[in-house]
Length: 542
Image (tube, rainbow, N blue to C red; front, side, top):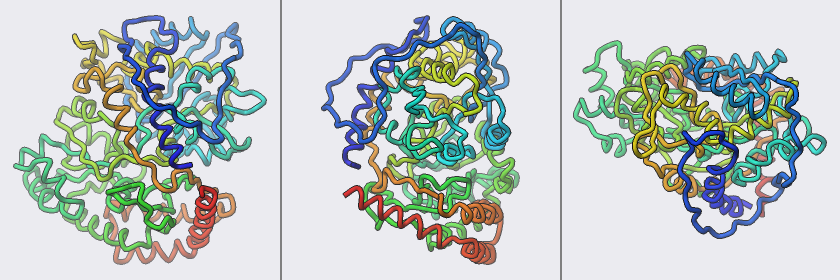
């Protein structure tokens, strides 16, 4: 099964070429150049993968509707010009008025979950494997409409254009157990579906102090001390050279990954990978990462960096840490940060921050079920217009004009195209910056200046074709039998996990307390249950 899924990634080149020409654009001003399709070997079909039939239902657009859309990762202060054009276009195409809710890196988790739990009349939510409105858990709670439900089949009837050309690896990754059975509960975004954790480097500042990227590449987290010390002394007491996102930092340093289905910010379960060969089997066991020697070593080193003044104390405040990190990045006031990488992001990051940015990999890109669920759009069960919502997502992900308008803004206002057809942002773009990889099918977009005109066809696609799958690619933990323990463990984690991961507490006392409370809350029971399921998964794969 794993080899079959890996071979399916090779279908992406064909899919991307089809996507670029699919959909009714209504305009040619922002359409990407067409490219020739390269010959590829036919890949086998995925097992148990939903396929939409060729015949789709006719959408009733006789009544105007408003769709509310909750997005993540936005820096949007003024969307009037964009939404005027968007709604003029959607009015003609679908008789829809779109009302985006621009969630930020700091407020999305709380805002989206409050809206979902309160039954707000939001039609479409960003969801994924790592956000507070986590795809798997909220599907089980009944928050998302099953898109391939046999009775309504929104995918077949109103989303067949995008679904029929979505890479099979993303389709398979979207299939989960939810409130209405096993199926697809959100549309996966065609973006960076391989995970690659990297060091986010302010090259401008690095070189100011006589260092190069090789000084980062040739060491690791435990060897950053001298560089951090030099820059800290040069920049002053109020400068914090190490900008961290606690949970991501721990995974980068220890080579641990999220176990799909282990919902919430704590992620009590971990599966370890070999950073030199992510497909290598290291024993295929799930562990309590907080009890490992690797974690102990990590938190001890992080505590040293924190006490030396290298980490901003604000990184330990869960309510404000994400906003602090984003603001610090945009101001370029850091030396080394943490970043889950999307290919080509250095171009955008350098332009936004006004510095030279580079990303140094900790591992090669790898594919697991969590990474294929990295950015998705779910239709809320509170939506009164699920058919129109599905039709909008279908249009958005197949129409270059609409996707470019929503992602980049208005041509001539927020960006211009240079002689090579590449996007060059204007000053107005500062007030309209949605998250490029958080909206949908990025292959519809014209590349940005610095990426090259063939970025998606000759760089992006081959890069993710080369991503290897972890041994437990398709494994998904079912927490049903240990939900009580997980809830208690999450409460314990709130007290300790972030503080330990950014160094704001002394691990000599805090870590033993943490481990004792985890064990009392049922940690061993959860780990044992996860491994029973993992063993069953591998037995079924034979």
